Length: 410
Image (cartoon, rainbow, N blue to C red; front, side, top):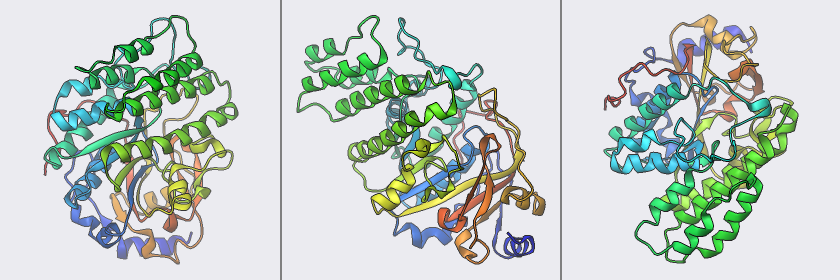
C-alpha cells in the first residue's frame, strides 16, 4: 500500500475519535452507513482480538447506533447456554444470571466424574475469567440500558464447558409434567462425552410437541458441544484441531438458524472474531486452524455466498498494545511488521480513527496485510471485507477494575 496515499486518505476522510476506555462516542459518526443498513440482512461486528479491554467499548458504541436504528437483537460468538442466561438477564434485569455463565467461572453445571476442560494444545492455566466476565457484564448492562430492556441475545457457539443446558432445560420445564424426559437426561456415571451426546439425542424423542422450542434447541446445542470436545480437547497439535474447528463452524451455522427462529427475527447483529464473520475466506491466514480449520467455510462466507445474505461489517483493529489471551505458548504483546496496515496507521496517528474502506476503492484495490491476535498476519481486500474500520493506536488487556454497575450513558 502506498504510504502517501494512505496518509492523504486518512487526513481527508477518516473521522478522529476520542480515546476509548469508557468514552461515550457519537453514534452519528456511523451515519454514512445508514443507507446501507436499511438494505442489510446482518450487521457483523468483528474484532481481531477477543482479549482486549477496548472490545467492549467498540461493541457498545456500535450497539448504541444500531439500537437507535431499531436493531436490538444480537448473536454472539458465545456458548449457547451462556446466551440463554445473558438473554434472561436482558429480559429481567436479574444480575444473578450474569454470575452463572457456564463458560466464565460458574461451575455448578460441571460433571464430578469427568473433566471436560480443554486439554492437549488447548489447555490453559491462566484464563482471564474474572476480567472476561466483567467485560461481558459491562456490555450486557450497556445494551439493556440503551434499549430500555428490549434487547435480545443468543450465543451461537459451542459450550466450551458443556452442561449448562441441563439447568436451562429444567428451568424452562418448571411446572410441566416432564418426568420421563428429565429421567432420560440424568447423567450416567462414567459415560464418555460421545456416549453422553448419544444419550441426549435418544432423549429428544421424549420432547412433547407443546413444549417451548428452546428445549430441543438447548438439547441439540449440548449434544453438539459434547461432540466438539470429544473431537478437539485432546488434540496435541494445531493440525489435529482442524476437523474439530470445521465441526464447530458448522455447529455455529446451525445455532444461528435456531437463534433466528427462537428470537423471531430476520435481522441480527453478529459479534465475534472478524475471521468468523469474513465475507470472503481469503482473509484466513494460510495454514490457519482458525474458523473452519481450512476445511469449512466461515460463518460470514457461508452467509454471504451460500445463503445470499447481505452483511454490513465493521472491524476493530489496532496498532500496538497487549492482551491477556490465555495460551502460554503464543504472544500477548502486539508486534506487527512494518508493512501491515496496523503499523502504517500507527505511524500516521496516535488518535483513534473511524474510516470507511469502500470510500477509497483505488487505495484498497490490492490486498492489505492486517495483524491480529497472536501476531498472526492475514492478507485481504479490505474494502470487500469491511464497510467500516475502527482503528485504535494502542489497546490493553481485559480488566475488571471499572464501575460495573454503571451502564453506558445514553
